[in-house]
Length: 265
Image (cartoon, rainbow, N blue to C red; front, side, top):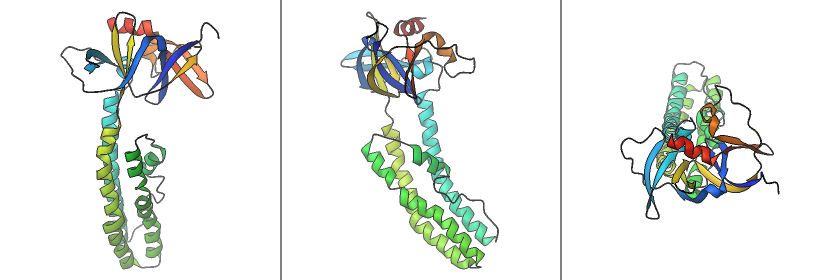
């Protein structure tokens, strides 16, 4: 094995793979209760008790100039609440278009609406959340299929029948869908748990708060080109040791000593 190949702990921030040398890492744990004292730096998350010891926490997203996980999570929950409202508005617009004898530009494809696009790509390791999300499939598809049914009925002049069908689906499929949104929101709130990677430079220990920690891997870091001023990691350029490439996966390697130097500065 080349001397430049080292063991690294891999983790994720906003979907991007990162790594830090394993000889800096002593433990990986779930983020627990955090106490935030006054006058912590902008990237500081506060203190956490880990095995009876107080550990200073660094939000690695913020240190690297990225959007904070907590802010992203709040935005994601707000977007999920909006998806519930979207479907109430969708059915109201369908009903209004029938009453007013006009065409509607509603999305009929359940995979094309904002919720459908999120639903098709969202992944979770939480079995309870996964099971709950699967329950969306049938009522969500039936709601969007209703649009094509109503369009066909109105083209045949069956406006009253179309309104009756909409009302029936409101009490059935839409009611089920809204209930699922309400039941899923607290699961989403609880499922998104951050991870703490406990790292040390030999004298100090800090906890790096990250989205996920995945595995250990041997990496031979390759040089990283100078980052453009508009690159998301431009502000973190001095902390980056290089990149590791495996197939289509690119892992950004963080240099541990520089990391401690940045925190001290």
